[in-house]
Structure formats: structure tokens, C-alpha cells
Image (cartoon, rainbow, N blue to C red; front, side):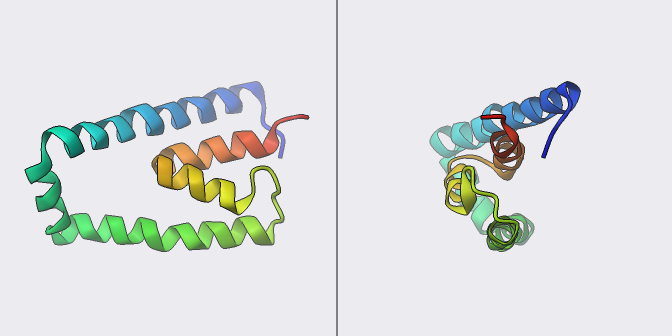
Length: 101
């Protein structure tokens, strides 16, 4: 997959927002607002989004393995997804798999 320079900037921006914005908010909430985090796990609407993300992950792993994308592969995408949000891992994975060696 080849991206234009503008598309690469958009993907880098999306990955940065996912890593620092969404993950940052999650980490702040996890350590400073533990009561609200536990309330989110008891909220049906919040659980719907959490479950959806965990249902989409195996689907994305499957698509990556079927498409035979090797760099970094579905295991690399798993690590990226669990260490960050999907808003980070998807654009970062696309950038990483399209880099020119």
C-alpha cells in the first residue's frame, strides 16, 4: 500500500491523537478517577463499546492474516492494539506496513 505524503500526515495525526489523546485520557481516568472507571464497567452503554472493540480485534487480526501483511503482522497489531487504542493501532499499523524498506 502506498500513501501520498498528505495521507501519511493524516495517518500520523490520527495515530498521535489515538495514542496521546484517547490513551492519555484513559490513563488519567484510570489512576485519578478510579470510581468513575468502575462505574463505566457497570454501565451498559460503555460495556457495549468495550465489547465491540474486543469483537472487532479478532476480525482485524483475521483480515491481516488473510491479506498476508507481514510487517508487523497480526501479532504486532495485537500488541499495538492492547498497548493503545484502535485509533492509534490502525493508522500506525497501516503506516508501518506501507513503509519502504
